[in-house]
Image (cartoon, rainbow, N blue to C red; front, side, top):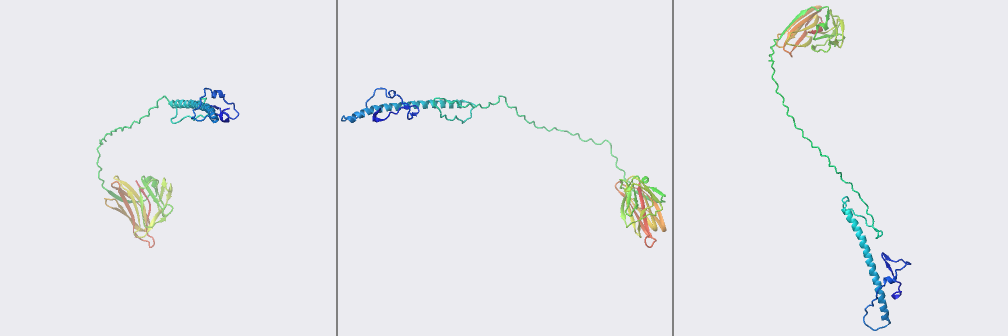
Length: 338
């Protein structure tokens, strides 16, 4: 028992003993000479004696407290040393991530926790391949040799003297348009007044129109062809077209060339008179006439002409007189170019 009738409070490292635990040996806690407390002078009494004994007990308790603090400080120093050593080892690790630290350990102060090991990926020892440098394209100078002048002297085109002539001849009983019109041929009136058939793929002879037309099918001569369009063939057709009244006309046109060409026009009259007029630019105009006061007459007008390339020949077939009160007329059956 200690002074003041209190039960001793033994200590151990880490805190007070729990109730019912075995206390530490008092002799160890209080070993050593006791030194009475220095009390102020006064009358000696029982209270003084009591104070003297109490001072001895308090001195033992203070020694125990100082010992506990020394042990606690030593334990804390050990724990802090371990944490500092781990931190230094972590900072010295070249693979550690900057700014990271180990978590505080709150377990037994006498056991040193093993810090987690972090293995950082090591950089590859091989150097990165060099980046290819684009080689600028250098334009290649290409020298084009100058064009050599032509060694063949050009002969200036000779001037073309335009010429034109027209003659009238009887029409054969059967006219083969395909064999005669090697450059082009045209037939009118095969099925109706608007029917126009010609050499397939050709367009040299042009129909420029005229006065209103009608179809007839009692021509004295017949016409045949092959290789035509739109009708491929025709055999011995007596058809043609006509136009009534004085001043009625048909107009055709054909291309000219420096070489002489021949255009044949198959035409006629019925109780009328007609005149064929042929014109080439730069040449004199040629004409031919045909007349029948009572019936039908036909003719093949042969036109021979030449002129500068790019010019055209114009043919006009005109009714100059009519001898029938209702429909004296001129007619047209075919034309060929060779």
